[in-house]
Length: 466
Image (cartoon, rainbow, N blue to C red; front, side, top):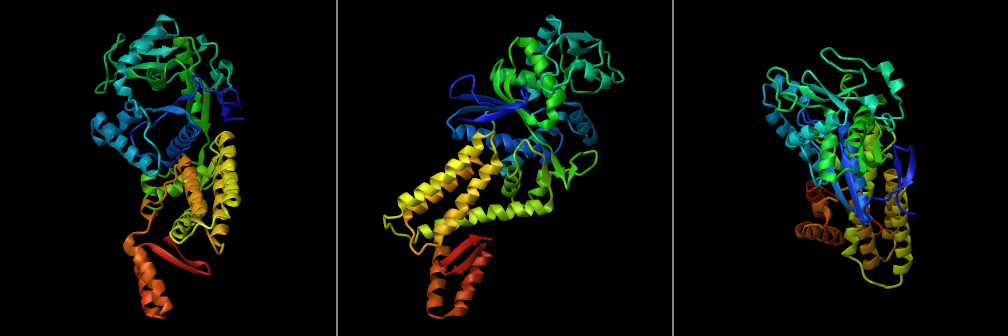
């Protein structure tokens, strides 16, 4: 059946068919870099990194573009408040962004365009809109004629008549119509600016993504994605600008992730209930945060509470413990040759359940349920009196395959026990056989100090990272 994707533009799931067979062009709106990212920013980064990973897993060559907005009213205000140059401020927070998202297991975009590197492209784009009558200059500002674009509102399912009710002209704006939005803003005193045919100024927010997406992905892309809060007006305005300029569809599929609530209340900077990723990384493993975010379907609201995060930590540890125990058993197994077909079928069924879930609009919640199926299966197999290395290897490779799609890093230092630690475990077993329990307890404490917890079971000694 292939991948089914929910398209915000049509409000239904559709078969995913890219423009070019085997290739996907994908643009995700990136951060405005004037502060550290919070978990609301982190959700689309993690979600669409996972979408990209799954598309690659299914054999697509994905060109993934995610921008940095490095000039904006908020950036200028923050730089003035801190007494910094805009470029100094944005460079610092771009570096912080990379550090945060890398810790969250996210891959680098193929391209991370910056607005300040595309000013000439933006000016040229705006000039075409003016020439076509979709934009006009007004005392150094340039505005988009919203009502001239017949399809305005098709993404957010709002008509221009409905939008007029809440529209207004801010002080200092010189619009023909309250619905018109800024493409170029005339420079204010002591404000960063660039020269243009309309005087010194800087781009409006919406035009930036239209230009950067077109420059790197062409007139029409396969997927445009971002948070639900961007659907209107940002993405709506991108469509109006881009399709007026090119006469072609801007994006074939639009994807939007749901909001994050904090303790059942919508996260908002005005309320002050947002959580910075850089802070939460000091409290919990970033992989737990990623696992938590992926445990709910991306289009659904996500409630962030301490209890739910702890539940996610327990669930992830259950999966990783099974993986590590399979690893440990592998070094003590033989090939008996009579179990392979039975267990291969069971493991393959878990993998198929995972693919079925992810094919259904990237349902990571159900995908994780399939990984839990694999975990339960592994624990049952580990309880067998005899285990075979070929079955254990298949468990390991399947864990690694599915967790890699989800971007969940396996603890590298736990891939194999260090030789010294392995020797200590063997020495402890020998001490127990010799009834030297004092030495056995001493070794247990040494291993605990190394972050290794031992569990003595009827099937032998198992271990996990504490």
